[in-house]
Length: 120
View (cartoon, rainbow, N blue to C red):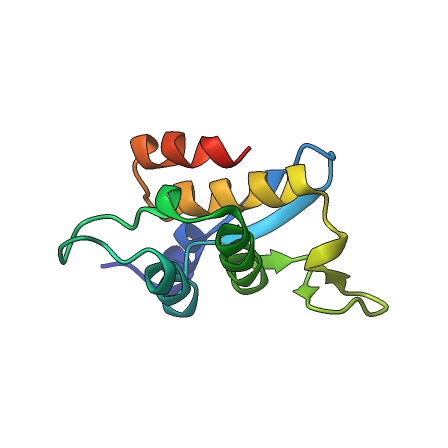
């Protein structure tokens, strides 16, 4: 039997971004997953989401929504505040890194992540 604390531990991970700054991320939430599916629905039920077919602007928009939902610490928001970073303040390199780490933590296959590399 898995207790609540054990379950929570597998949802989160601390990662060090290319900037050297540490972030606490979580697996995709249903809200973040639905954003991915809206722009890149699977061809058939149960198939993986394929963001590699989307254009760069759509990719960036979805990435920001996923980061806002799945970066736990430091807190991210649309607009900066005293103790809150704006998602737009993050470097492109850190944004991509965090998105890929969230997708990996959530169980996306390596092949899918390799396809996403074309956006780098």
